[in-house]
Image (cartoon, rainbow over all chains, first blue to last red; front, side):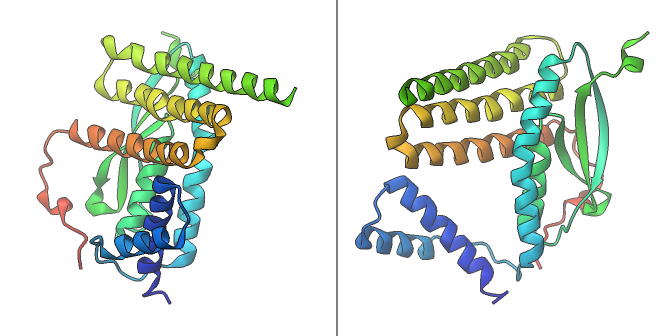
Length: 138
Length: 104
């Protein structure tokens, strides 16, 4: 099952996109979509740990409301400070997990991933946050 | 009644998206650092466009498949493109070893 999961997930995702694009759920269209989804080239992938993948996806979705909160705070802020930061990577062996991490961190306006550092064990992050009182006082 | 409520909610979302667009794109003309402009752009491009698409979704619910696709595409594309631009702003790294492919 774990070996089959990447295939199932990517095919389901492509089929879903096909259905949205054509907005047609007739049997023939579904069949064409399935053929296209299977024929498109796919990256070789290792077996995916389902639990870790679900957790990463959930964190990515939760980042969306958080992003709006941060955007609001930036819009309200009279002054901002830039810093460099870093965060441990979840698992660099799985490109999908790295992608989800980069998406989650970069989506929020406070943080942008600049790349991997320390041999891929940490993300180098650039942050822009509202200045606190100590920062703004000369 | 319900109709006008939806119209108002949609106008509110479109307006909020427009505010974020201007807030994020205006600093592009300024003299701030490159990365700071990217932070502002992620507010405008990703979050502003997301609000606008939600507003459009309320206004023309019949087109939901395409609007959902646009929403998904814009959020993922803008975010990852922001990361690519940020990564490109760095000077070339001295240790090519960290660039290794994760292929087995």
